[in-house]
Amino acid sequence: MSEAAPEAFRFQVNLGGMLDILSNHLYKSPDVFLRELMQNGVDAVTLRKKRQPAWSGGRLTIRLDPGTSLVFQDNGAGLTREEIHQFLAIIGQSSKTVLNPDGSLPEDFIGRFGIGLLSCFMVSDTIVIETQSAGGGQAWRWTGHPDGTYLLEPLEAALVGTSVTLTAKKGAERYFTKGEIARLVRYYGLALPVPVFLAGDSEPLNQIPGDFTSASRRQLLAFGEWLFDEDFLDAIPISTPHLSGVAFVLPYRTDPTAGGMHRIYLKQMLLTEQGEALLPPWAFFLQCFLNTRGLRPTASREDFYEDAALDEARKEFAGAVQQYLETLSREDPDRLGQLVQIHSQAIKAMAVWNDDLFRIFVDYLFFETSDGRLTGRSLKTAEEGSWVSSVPRFQQLKPIFLAQGKLLICTGYTYDQELIQKLGWMFGRPFRPLGEEGVDLVMEEPALAEKQAAFGFLRAAGQALAPLDCKGELRRFLPAGLPGLYSLSEDARFLRQVESARESESFFSGALGSLLAGSQEAARGTLYFNLNNPLVKRLLEMPEGPLLENSLRVLYVQALLAGGQPLRSGEMKVMNESLLGLLEEAAPA
Image (cartoon, rainbow, N blue to C red; front, side):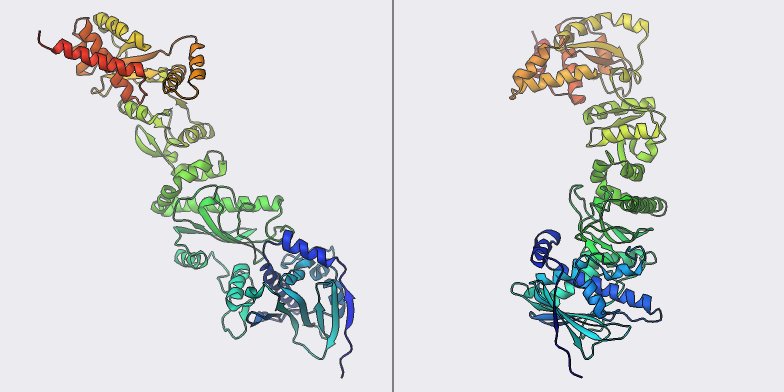
């Protein structure tokens, strides 16, 4: 039987404009042509299974003439003449939509837009399709050209299914090599439910586990190392209504602003390497291999459409990670501790403003306190506590609070103050900043008789410290080795910092000077003398005079340094003059 002459037809679209859209606006790279071919092939296999439930053995095969041409073949449903005209010529229509009466796409199909086949024009000047419907009937050859025309001619016979032949155009030869094809199949189609073979190979290019929940940790880590070429710290299986796969924990510290290189699939076809749309913002320390279901892709099929399903998928992911971490805290706290230790700074940075991340990790984050390094879990049960934002001041006050059985938290490290404040209000803990009045809570007032006996000492302290914007008071506190403790109110602390900045002769010295001039009163600090300290006891017995005043001024500067206060120029001068005065008093007549 002789073959009839081919008939000529035109696409119902401005193909030149469409190709410009494909190459310059919709797709990021010409290599998506292989993704589109695989999507069409998998959908054809899925359709044949629906029509012939007893059939099995779907597969995709790629034959190469390296650098010249390729043939992409599926053994799926194939196309009739009517389906060719309807679905290869009318851009924007999909052959799969006929399966649902309401015109919607069945959940087990990947493709959604009829423009996918046209992506092949980015690498080939012709598209030749040979197809035989699995339901029988005439076989057909369809040849499409970039000028908007296509030819349709009958064939004597063809294999059931569809084959697409592409011939490399100039500049696209690298997409027609075995290495590049294998890379792209694994990149885009690693999770596909239909095996993809290179002609002549016995093993498919996309062979991976179907269910990660039953895999061991060792197997998951081995898969992650193979896929991402990374020796991960841990692997978190993900299995939710919208998601399945693995979230791998990176073994090194990461920047929260750095975009992760993930593998995120939609119905087994790679959609994106970027996780911004699907993953919570705190997932920066994870590298994910995920397959998604029930989510809508954008027009380019390179990201997800923002809707309620996507929001639900995010919540599912966060819940799966949280559940894993909670299990890890019970079964392997050492491994969880290692995870937090590596990623603590980045986790803290995100937990400051992300409540989900805060709730997941706060139990395992460490904070420096007067009782040692405590976790957020311990602080959640604390009755009360004070926090101080200066590390040197914390070190100065730590033994005093410890001796009094009171909790002092150091928030002088990056993000700790915000996290402690958040922990306080989120869990109802009475944590407050330590003001001058708070210091009084860990100090014992002297008896009236002690104050009367120290009248001369306090008068000398007033004379010595008044020029330094400071007053002296007596207290009894531990440790006994600490002779004095310098304290400032928050207002006085601010004015002192302004004064120190002004003396640095910075560009803003004039403005800072005006700010100081506008303050109603000088920054008044308090130097608490420790009645338990042997040196202070000795000074209490000393008569009023230059020797006592010089000694008190030296104690003042020592207390400033112990409290982490920056010394102003006048205070350095006082220190030098006081030491010189002590030397002169001690010199023989």
